[in-house]
Image (cartoon, rainbow, N blue to C red; front, side, top):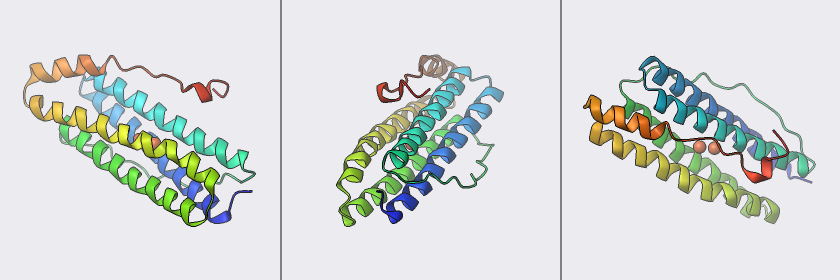
Length: 173
Ligand SMILES: [Fe+2]
Ligand SMILES: [Fe+2]
């Protein structure tokens, strides 16, 4: 049975993952208005990936005999000054989420909940990747943001991103 403190913390994390998905959909919508369809696709994929994080937590709570509780999701921002400003927010948001995952891990360690420690480990590694990916796009944007040609090429590159359903979720969606 899942410890109540850990269950509550995971339910808050579910909310944070849903907010992440919401934020990235909002960014996708903004890119659509700027005729940057590749950036918009990248954000839609990112939003879907956050939904898979939601499902991982959702399934874990149920597997441990806990109860998922959903909370209100804050409205995300809808306007940014530039593509660079968008990715600055993606990067800082992912760093914030890393902090939340680390807090979850600290709690599981403090409660000696070894199953949760093992489960959260996947998210610790995932956040390393999330921060690196966001920073990679951000650094490229800083090189080209003021040049339309460079932005056009980067848009084409980001357009190649596709959604890959994680193997452990294959039977779920
Ligand atoms: Fe996430
Ligand atoms: Fe993320």
